[in-house]
Image 1 (tube, rainbow, N blue to C red):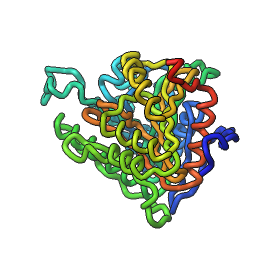
Image 2 (image 1 turned 180 degrees about the vertical axis):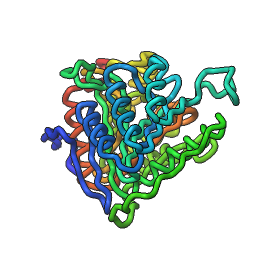
Image 3 (image 1 turned 90 degrees about the vertical axis):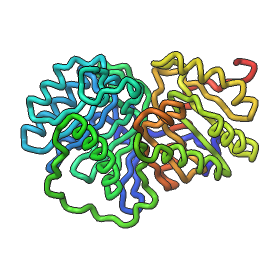
Amino acid sequence: MSSYGQLRHRLGSKQGFEAYVEGTRVTLLHDGEQCFPAMIEAIGAARHEVLMEMYWFGSDRTGWRFANALMDKAREGVPVALIYDAVGSIDADDTIFEAMRAAGVRVIDYNPIAPWRRHFRIGVVNQRNHRKMLIVDRRIGFTGGVNLADQWAGESDGGEGWRDDAVRIEGLAVASMRTIFLHTWNELARAEAGEPFVEPPPPPRYSGESQAKVRVLANHYLGERRAIRSAYLDRIRRATESVYITNSYFVPDRVIRRALRRAARRGVDVRVLLPGESDVPAVSYASRSMYSWLLDQGIHVHEWRGNVLHAKTAVIDGEWTTVGTYNLDYLSWRSNLEVNVTVEDEAVADAMARRFETDADQSQQISLEDH
């Protein structure tokens, strides 16, 4: 892989970087400006089903844009299902969800703070569904940090232009995303005495071979909670050249910190890109409290100077890339439902590294003296 200092060309595509990885088409998308049109297009072209799992589904212009797309599809007779997090979407007007239900969209709110509801337990209030997934026709899947709210819309569209990343995958790996969605949907449906999702006739199979290089990782409360974290740790521990991490809520535990420290001591170029302005100030303070330690270990810290940075990505050794919803913090590790896509491919990794370089150019590199 090219070194950090040699990565000098920028991404200019409105559609994002695209590559084929063993039968799967992988497209890296940046910000709502690229993500929203691609997602709306996929929903509009759906013929068999549309499944969405979203932490923050706003009732603003962006939220209604997607609600209308889902309702149009449901009125055509296409099965449409939505899971939204009750706390992540707490500011949304219930009218938007009522309208979708009336149009035939099957809607479930995840873990509402509602003591009058069946199976409510106060001890799990902090357990949130932090995923952002769209799965269309079992072939096309999206995930990343992008929620459906005006904060992610471009400033030219009246939004706030938050900086974020997502990935669109097309191929057999999407089946894993669908399985993750149905696992959560069916658990919620049983808890609320609802109906499990009824599968429509399968669409034609997408041609492709091994999916070893594209993996979809998730954590479930009653299942495997370590998959995403273990993937991070494994790649950091094996890194020989570079570890570039962009993370909006970066409060890693001792095990992650130790792996980063050891990588830096091996001569690996370890860099983290963190928000200068955060939508959760307490987390920002917690991250900054670690700057001295990170810098002492030889880990480079870049602080974003644009609008809110909300991305959760990493690229390691120019070979391995991950994009998803997982933050390197306690909530993602212990409490939240999360999902990440990992890709082993040099072209995808190079594109993500170039994006890291672009973002770093718009950031301030922190020194011990400055801190």
